[in-house]
Image: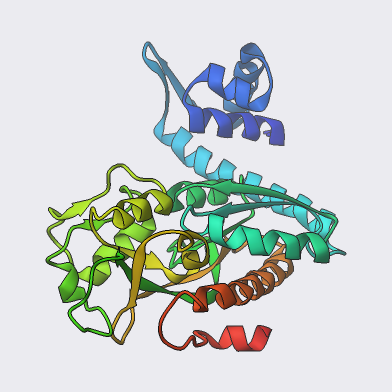
Amino acid sequence: MTHVTIKQLRYFDALARELHFGRAADSCAVTQPALSMQIHELEQSLGLMLVERTRSGVQLTAKGQEIAQRSARILGDVRDLIAFAQHANKVLSGVLRVGVIPSVAPYMLPPLLPLLREAYPELELHVRETQTQILTDELIEGKLDVLLLALPVKHPDLEALPLFDDRFVLALPKERKLSGRVRATKELIEHERLLLLEEGHCLRDQALTYCSLQQVDTVNTFGASSLSTIIEMVAAGFGITLLPEICLGVEGRGRDLSLVRFIDPEPFRTLGLVWRSTSPRKPDFMELGRLVTRAWEDGLLDTTARMPGKQKKHNALIAQSS
């Protein structure tokens, strides 16, 4: 009778990701011989050759690749089962692993974390800040529970909750004027040196899409991975940039910038939460979304003081959560 254990699947899942016995053993906190023995027993139980050992390393066979995908799903279901048991009776308790993109984390976490601590003191929060693709991969792999980022994130195994729209504004050096214009246009940007984050950041892609820039000869990133670096370059007169409204309360302080809204329809990104559709913790994520929206609304008071024009609500969800 074929007998497959969760331990075998977990070790094989690590090997499928690392494609190296030593690194896979380290990630599972076992010795390499112990991991190798479990992989061998898994192959015997299934009657399949899963791994091809070559001089250059390890490769999965065609059958091994299929088993790896199925193993990842099974392990994900096991993690969700355990999470359900741990959190069945309490909302936002125990460990919650949240992934946040860099153009959101520095601006949402300061107002959000005190709200979480006050309302849910039993919550043990772990935060991972990196780019969208890495976060999405780690969410699917079960390394993270929920993501806070710009939507959409398209994947059949993921579910999303839109929270609010974050408008973009044009940032110029303080001494720059728009020749009497009250609002900016994307045509204006075509003749300017546009400074954006390095490739891999969704904020860069959203700005380029709005500007309809097919040729990016005038786009300079300087290898920047943070908005703070970009804003310092703009303030020093090296170019202009598009900034999300969410960052203005922090990044607008003490810098010589001119901030100008765009003509209607204003460019924006939608921020929201994303989780595995199989996760049993949807009540947790809905409550987290409510607190994120509240934290954003609180932050608008500071942002409004730094921008021309009347502040307005962006989403019916916001009114419902007030």
